[in-house]
Length: 162
Image 1 (cartoon, rainbow, N blue to C red):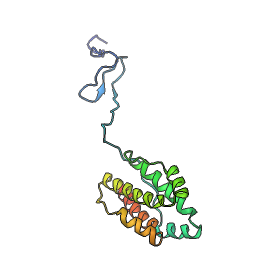
Image 2 (cartoon, helix red, strand yellow):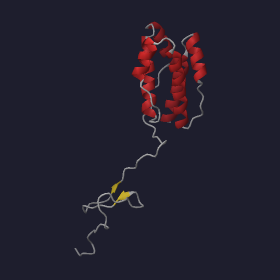
Image 3 (spheres, rainbow, N blue to C red):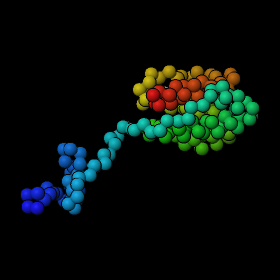
């Protein structure tokens, strides 16, 4: 093996800028490795899809369990939305506690969840077909926001898996 065959790294030290190929210049004689990129402010990366559920099943289970399943479902979908899109900031546990102890916070929370679904639809490249105002009206009239929101989420998750 001649000296021309041996790899000699370019002169660079710790903290050197990555090359134009997106790989850092090796300083230890090994092959180049990918450089992690730092997301720009306002950018996000879509994460895993949520669980498709039967909208009728969600609605009926909420009625049968006197609203307990409705709270569990509400917590789960907000966690799924948060995991799907890192730009969605929500603390589902605090939302549920406020809904239990502050009477009209539930309507505000239902409206905000509708906005989160719209945000996730936009991040997935879908048209925003969910209206937070309709979700609030359905919550007031028959508690049907769970049916409406779960149907929109199923469309989102199915689009994501396609």
